Length: 467
Image 1 (tube, rainbow, N blue to C red):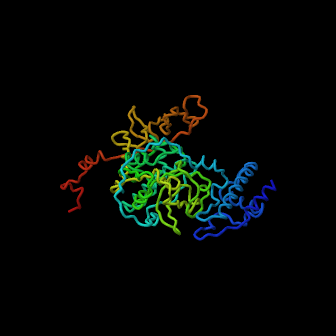
Image 2 (cartoon, rainbow, N blue to C red):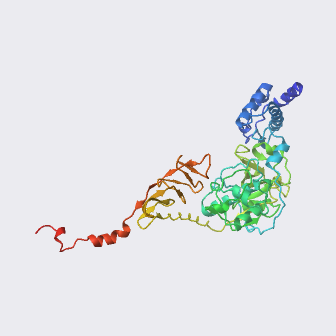
């Protein structure tokens, strides 16, 4: 093992070949970190602490360290000769490529894509570059976690973009709602298709905000019907012409576009910055969002927003090579692009339901009452007629025979000797009795008669000053 490591150190010990336009400070390590076993261990320990990977068994830690070291060797070997893009240590640095693909890409869905008309076919002039981030149409980078819901993030991002363009308001929308509720064709955390998700949003009255329906990274029960809004609506969706980068550019010059790519490669796993020209195929396994395009040092690129958090890539984004010879585009980006259509403002949020009407007081008789939710108990009776009422602060309570206490309905036996309310005679536990309080006495029914009986007579000298 020592001999193997020494050989690896010799390979890794060369410094970076600095290239203009590439940011080596974002690779997560320094060439000096790979010069010795001690510095490599220190680098791993620091990385593990940052990513909460310290709580592991000794065997697991050694296995992950070995994977980390192999990945770093691959990263550093690439960076020594990098021309267009760099690789770096990120949150995936202790995963094999197979583990990475099983957890973060490889969406599984039955392809169902009914071709729609391309609404930007007549566009003849497009800008040389565009970046919807600078136009305020792109929300913060999100993190799908270990849930294969990339399709939901691509869908919400495209709707966020067109909503900002049409209404002027950027609202972060709920991926969790799509994962929980769009289940006719989609498979939640096991994958989905953006076209189907656009149909769901258009057919079901819109998509709620992230704050109203927060992300949990696991499929659960749909709760959209319990929410009052606000929602962002779309009218329809359209597809970009398949395998046509120029049509993708036309569409993207007008709004952010949902795209699917192959993202499971080793270089994609550790992409740090630059224009990605590395190996990737066209086996689409990941939904992302195209948010712009441009040119850097003569190399055309697409700006793509990912859903692996801001630590991956260029703060969560990647620049994919554009205008390549293959008609499918880099990593298949031109194969399955689509976008939402929105023609007008969002509906006003539904008003909150009115508060329930206050419950009326409980009438004991024509002159006495108890608060709502109480029970009237007779406090004093004469010849079977109650002349004074008390209140028990429970609904449907049992009034005890001492006229001073009461018990709840589910413990109806009054144990006056022990001041306990029992379920039945012989109950060993029970609960403490409640004390009755005096009922409210209202003279309102008598007020008119009182005024009539005691209204001063103008001729009665008892109510006037002596003359």
